[in-house]
Amino acid sequence: MKAVRAGKPGKVEIADFPDPILQEGEVILAPLACGVCSTDIKLVRKGADNTGYALGHELAGVVVETSPQSGWKVGQRVVAAPYLPCGICYYCLHHQPTLCTNLYDVSFLPGGLAERVRAPRDLTRRGLLEIPSGLSPEVAALAEPVGCTVKGIEDSGLRPGDSVLVIGDGPMGMMSAAVARAYGAYPVMVAGMLPHRLAVAEQYYADVVVNVTHEELRPIVDRNTAGRGVDVVMVAVSSAEALASGMACVRPGGMVNAFAGVPKGTTVDLDMRTLHYQQIHLTGSFGTTPEYMAKALNLFVSDRVPIAPLVTGRFQFDAVVDAIAYAAEREGLKAVVLF
Image (cartoon, rainbow, N blue to C red; front, side, top):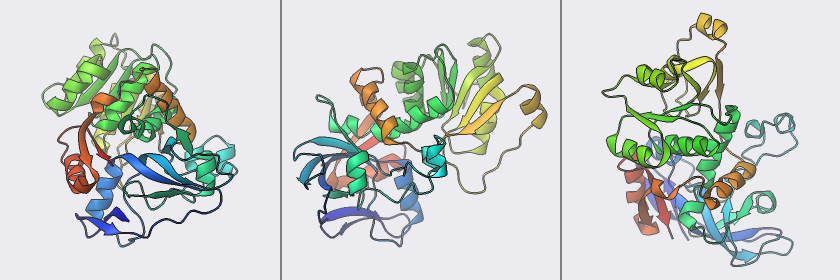
């Protein structure tokens, strides 16, 4: 079968992979849609020596083979969690599942950008979610990234009526704003640099948008929060400067969530006096679980999160190289590969 992998740095390869072999308690999926994520872009830029894995972890598919005791039937449409907390380690037992010491032991293989995908037994049992009737595969595939933002919003302790600032106008920033609004935040502000993305934010996801290339952020925050600063800041940009901006815009006693992944060694200057006397809360949020993905699907079905406007690039599997280039060059918002 064909699958997509990272090859030499900056190169994408469509290569021959072994056909997956069904084992007891498992299912084989035929992908219907797979989102292209910034993690895929990073892997392509870095290059990969391990040729046994395919790119893609935002997967919606249909069951095409199933074994006894799997609990699934051929023809059922599902989304698949890309990894699975074990449920029994120290962190799982302390309700911090994405810190699980065994988090990546179970995942679908070889990856979502493949003609066939095998879901191991434990993933089949705990990590597959049926796609609700009427929900398109390209939207359902985004249950994984939206599940990450649901976790981020919940980790931030957001309450109805809280003001929220999302720093970052990329797909994850938009999703964070959408979920914050669905959870009752007001106003929701999105700060970014690309006019075409901020236009989408203004139409669908935000009450206030700020183009930081020619607008100063803090005065606009003050005008919309009676001068206090925002209750919650979601930093959805991979930079120390963005986090510093978030710290400068949060109210005393507010929460700043370092939501975006950053390169190893990234540091930020921290005014300990401000942190102490203004009682600022600083956290990070990483990953998702099947439970958060289920919440994402419910937000889609209830129309509380209008996710379809984020899908601005649709590509067939044989044009996957174009899909990855589209995402890397930030031409639109979200690229999805359709099968």
